[in-house]
Image 1 (cartoon, helix red, strand yellow):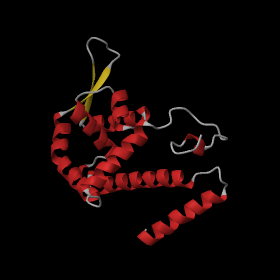
Image 2 (cartoon, helix red, strand yellow):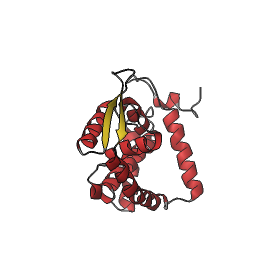
Image 3 (cartoon, rainbow, N blue to C red):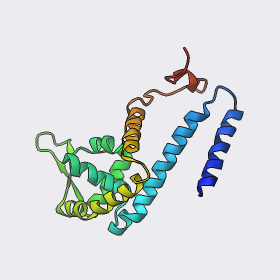
Image 4 (cartoon, rainbow, N blue to C red):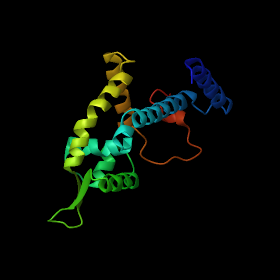
Length: 183
């Protein structure tokens, strides 16, 4: 999509939401829609430009990354650190294990506890691939100044840490929960 098409679509989205009534917040929708779009574009780009050449998916990379950074972990901790569901992480670990990049090990003190470890092949994949991953990350981030990058990271961390933890009712108004909304 071209930049002008993107801008027109954003205007159309805001207009359509505003038509639904004053209780709907078009700006909140725009923030989350744009964030989701960016995340989807990044994932697809990393898959096609980096991970396809190694025969691993981007979710596979995220599991390998978590273990590379934090060492052997339980699947639930990997899911938490990679921000994916346990079911998704289990499927990714199955594929990585089948391909020889990770191995599950039962801990000797508690046989119910399973941790996931990188194999030599997994460590080699990490060494060979991260230069490509980081190069692509730098290419994406180059659109922003260092200050803008730091601001974006700070804002995203705020969204992550302040995210809603409970469900909502259809009658709840997003406007009443915004920090800048009047009491």
